[in-house]
Length: 212
Image 1 (cartoon, rainbow, N blue to C red):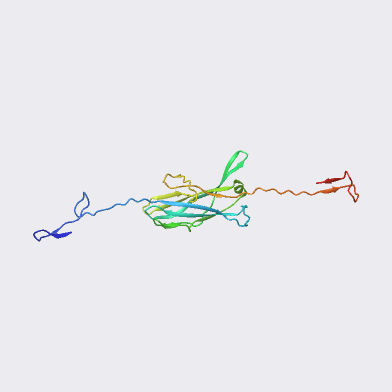
Image 2: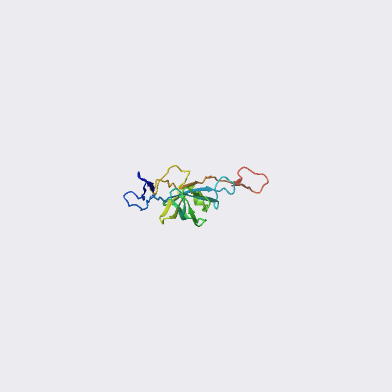
């Protein structure tokens, strides 16, 4: 900075940081908080329009990755994704059947703070009879990435429709597993036929037998 003193002489001064020397740069440091959040939604597709699930019908999963921090995150992938049938009753008790499910989409190259992506990743799971017997599926996924400063980031998925808001990771963000309810219909059909076991006469007589 330059100016004039009361005598008209030119005076100059150089800026300096607090507790620094003239001419040194003033540095303002920002706290970097790289964060990503993953929302997972599963929808059962009733392909035969019966109103009830059948084996091999798909459950379609969508993954929404959100950058909730203040730093760009790169090389985002879905690290793990598994689906479990719940409370399948076996002779030894209750059993959870888990299946690792492949996720299409590869890698999301970059996600800026405040942005979200719902189109890169997707998955489809084909129902089994065990899943239908259980009445619902529980799915969880984990996403990983790297902030531009090299800090690794990750998040366990949350079901945005579940407001229980269980914080598994302790990061003050919910990590509720994604539950897909499978409606059940228990029904039996009984068919009965009868055959006359008479003595060969054209007309039934008292005491003749009908075999069912």
